[in-house]
Image (cartoon, rainbow, N blue to C red):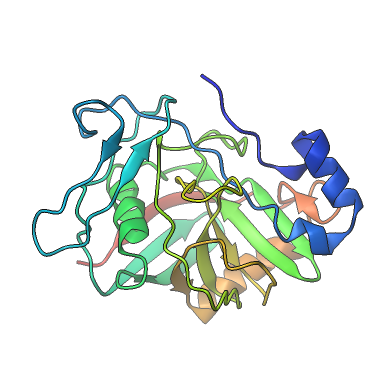
Length: 238
């Protein structure tokens, strides 16, 4: 199994980008995903896609790596706001998921949540740059290289609003490369409009993340949070 390493400190090219200053780091929130052998994939194991029913058809692509996660249903189950809770060791984050603007991403996120994929998983990355303040989670391995075994099609808003409370998908820097890893923006940040925004964390939840961020990182401005925080469970109101 091979996986892309996306944490900037782990690769020489990214290390050079970091040396160039924070403005260049704004493009460095990529996500690596691992593949799944699950029967929920298409018969050839390559994708899960369908146009059945009234929901949006989602083209999830297996990425050739292994994972215990099942691929989500091929038709999005949500077409409007979905209330959910991300319970963490630091406190609860109440979120509103955007099932209308990002139906395939929300479909995947809640499918993984129902499988317990996020249970007892660390938030492995914190950035504290002036223009980029996010907490990144969703990798059960805690290494920044893990994923669910498939990728999600991008659902992008060209406005590129990454204000405080934004919940968005990380990616490898390539189109349609999101998986399970996501980030929570805890202060207004500047990013290109290439990260799928799929929800909003409420003000109280943002304060929870702010407290984690106040503890700083293991590396200057970009590393593991000094205040360890883990997701205990993700649940959706239904």
